[in-house]
Length: 308
Image (cartoon, rainbow, N blue to C red):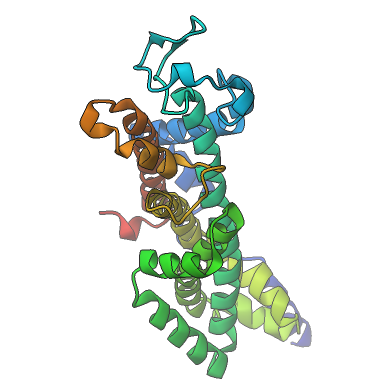
């Protein structure tokens, strides 16, 4: 009798953790969707272009020694003073727009991914701990989350940047503060459904530490929903950063993202020089749509009950 009771908790711990559907089967279904494959390919292409910007860019757009004001505001495929044609034209400072877009993609993606990873870690940890421990900590955390989510994210980020100032680290911190609450709420909801299940009770019976139960046993079951949120949150962070940079309070002119590139060419639109804003805008829209489509498809395959 004692031996059977002694082995039951260990057996419960060996049960599969992902209950929604096997992860391998879900990912196999993901690759069956042409739109999902296309979105993944475009996202991968965007990331590679950003990572390899220093090697594939025709010009270092922020090296003043390589800029020529005689080549300013050239139309696409127009030749400059040096005899070289610029595929996407140049801006008012003579920067090659193709090179500026590649470098801007790198900055926008860096801010979006870094802020999402940090917000994921902070929000998921706090949300799961709140669900597992309950009590006053859970109540206080959820009131803070409810209060923050009652305000527009862009407004909170704008106020934070007015206080913090400009810079990559400042806007990353602002986006972390804005987005952690989304992960905390989702992680708490998923963890509440898991904390009283058999494998958690078995872990308690084996007197495992709370940290081990939370991060080794409960966290894996919350990952499917958190992965979907993280994917779409990267796109949201890029969009928010671009909006703030367009307004002139995000990144400084020395670290121009796609939003700042769009802002730089905005005043030239009425004079017909569309390319300074148009091509960075196309790159921004393509990146955001590809990431969002990939996230939507992940949501469908990881949790079919949410499929529209």
